[in-house]
Length: 231
Image (tube, rainbow, N blue to C red; front, top):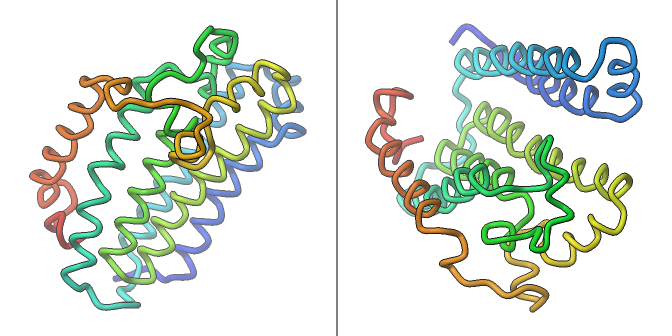
């Protein structure tokens, strides 16, 4: 490996820092005031893409520093997490969600938190976090902790940032939405604040998530270079 852990840490900090800096209201509003909404989104996407490519390259070149043994139960744990993770990610993106950019008008809908959103109002973000955790468990090395940990922290940090922004700008509609769902998965359901039935998610979303798991399980050696039960 030609890279270093220091380079990976630098790339991780740049990736997270760029997202949080450009998402902060003072910086975001100042740039939009100068160039407009859509040019800002373009700038944001370019910066995020460049930092992500750097992060991926730094991870690929980082030295292998084992932190714990790769036992069978850890592999089974990771494989058990992944179907749930992909259902959350795919189901989250296929469910109309007022926390998504440009979908804020859905807050005024009669049922602003249908199906998947009753589990958590940030299903895709939590899916990414669970995906990252599974890969940290099964790899067990320093570079993977930094790489996947960065993606997981950014996902949940971004979700918390969205909550804060919506709370400050959307008022009563946001509070009504929050009352019907939760930040942490299943909290609103367990506490009895919202009813839930598995069929509400939609069999298409469930099937798509499970199908993606099977496809990725099969293609993992060709896409990533190692079997899914290894990384």
